[in-house]
Length: 166
Image (tube, rainbow, N blue to C red):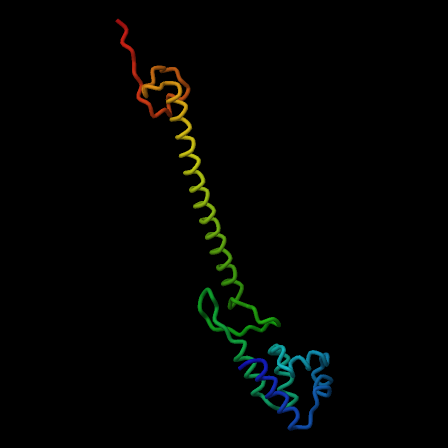
């Protein structure tokens, strides 16, 4: 059921019993603008408001329809629950599932950032390795390192040629 359909049923029920939206707003009690929004179908009332309207109009089906409209399924555990909030945006059946979801998202973000850091580290290592090769080739164009005391010796890809002393 949509808010518009609920509004039509509520208005028809009220008018069939001789109620106006103004009088209904005074009885609930709430602002007339809120009752008008419910009556136009712009918004779905909260369960508490729907129960008050249903009690005044002696139409329990109005409250039941709001409860059915507000039933949802938790995105964490799959349990069915009723969203009692005013803006109909709850996604979890309770605080434990909310915390579980947030912990999962934090872990996913951490894993994603670690994977991103690993990609960056691999790129940098490749650049540094290419820089070392270029430096060593510039120092020893034949491709053979002859300087055992070179600071780059530990990371140089060039083979070390040791001169034999006679």
